[in-house]
Amino acid sequence: MSSVLHPPSSGQDPLMAAQYRPISTHLAITPPVSVVIPAMNEAENLPYVFKTLPAWIQEVVLVDGNSTDDTVEVARSLWPGVKVVEQRGKGKGDALITGFEACSGDIIVMVDADGSADGNEIVSYVSALVSGADFAKGSRFANGGGTDDMTFIRKLGNWALCTIVNRKFGARYTDLCYGYNAFWRHCLDKIDLDCTGFEVETLMNIRVVKAGLKVQEIPSHEYLRIHGTSNLRAVRDGLRVLKVILEERSNRRALRRQAHQARLLNTGQGEAS
Ligand SMILES: Nc1nc2c(ncn2[C@@H]2O[C@H](COP(=O)(O)OP(=O)(O)OP(=O)(O)O)[C@@H](O)[C@H]2O)c(=O)[nH]1
Ligand SMILES: [Mg+2]
Figure 1 (cartoon, rainbow, N blue to C red):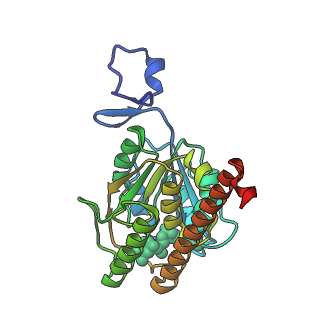
Figure 2: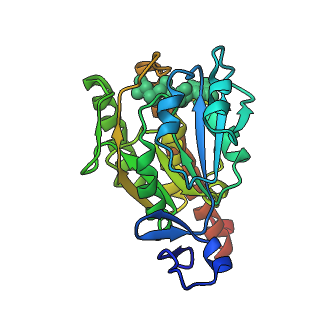
Figure 3: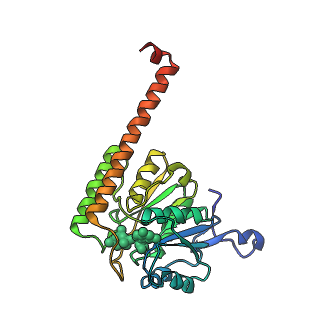
């Protein structure tokens, strides 16, 4: 693929070499990478988050959810070029949609601000994307992944919802409700996000499958939130995830019905029946 190259050797034209940024010892890439961080009162956690972000990241977009602490000031002090955007509405989904619009990179990486995601994993996500995947989906339950942050009940709920998505949409996911993902910007045109809460990750995972995009799971380790308390409510948000799954399923049926009717009309059978 044209966007992947081994790091240029010292004999190469420096102007040509400047287009490529090494992201590991054996890989250099040209596409700019943006990281989106939704953050609501995460000032105490941001030092841990920014500490692990690779220096080759082109842009960091922090979406502030009307924080009442020093989230914005701390972000600016830790990453001087950080682009801070205020979300229009409420919820993590709304924040991410706002953040995606503000990104200028070709590759967009979603990273939580609670210290649960290790920025050193970004290289695995980006490597998968430049190697041909459209959507690199983090998984805590793929071989090599893990979580320190899920209770038994949350694991059970996530497994049940993931099983439903796999059965209903023909996916082969090992994880569903996880916020560490990366994708090429062009995916946004195909998944047309329209939700506000924590169900956003599920909606993305379903719509990428429906759009026929190439998804690769990336084993990821979720660490404990370092400071503060979770904004997620297992039952409330679990039900919102289920609602999204059912809605996406009925939209799919309606689309199939429309396509079937269009085919009948084209062959003249529709008028006859
Ligand atoms: N801007 C913004 N960020 C939010 C909002 N809700 C949650 N977040 C951020 O989204 C990320 C994930 O939220 P968490 O509360 O950690 O939820 P979670 O990771 O699903 O759940 P835990 O595993 O319990 O931590 C964190 O960085 C939050 O600050 C919101 O309404 N606005
Ligand atoms: Mg968290």
